[in-house]
Length: 280
Image 1 (cartoon, rainbow, N blue to C red):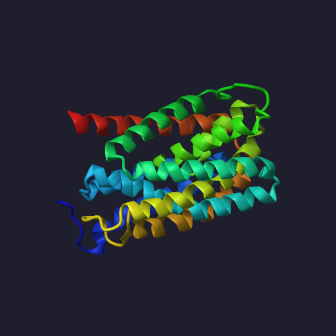
Image 2: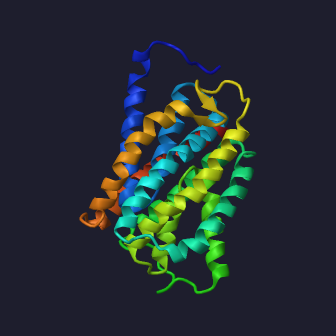
């Protein structure tokens, strides 16, 4: 049975954790272009678990709410990178359209998935990204991006589709993909921030519709979007994103990548353990 209620003091620790999560997510969005969702989803997933929300509903709520926070965070992060000339408009003319199409299809499919399937997708992709980010330069495929619009469309389509099922803005997959083709890292980060919008917007609409009328949701929820979680996370997330973009050029990105890889690895292990508990 889902348990809600109690006085405000009961929820103060959760409120603090969500606000801190928003700050960290925004900072990482600006620094690495990874999208705050890769941080927000596991935190929300565990928090909804503490509230005794069934795993079937918890993962959908975590993903839907995360996608909602990505919209304002992407806007603030993109603006900061735009001022530095690090948003590739020509790339986005192809990638944004196909990422949007991928997100639309991914949202339609994700709404039908059971919670454990979404958890498994998140855990597997988080593991692969962690391995990639733990290396100094990451995966290398070619010295340049493919000239073919079709090949670029395929990459953007799958990034949009997988990102929306994970509740992330696409940067977690976009930056490593572009880097694998020797694309300048700062332009990869800035362009990834912009790509968050065509992924998150259809995702939010789709998850709101998919969860409409569902029983035993947290208070103030629109479908699978929890408004309380959104309001606690997005202000600091949006506020910190430009600061992350500003200091991106000053930090040792190798160690930053490795620290984030460690976080992702631990997160993935926790997700796999939840899956094991589900089927044991």
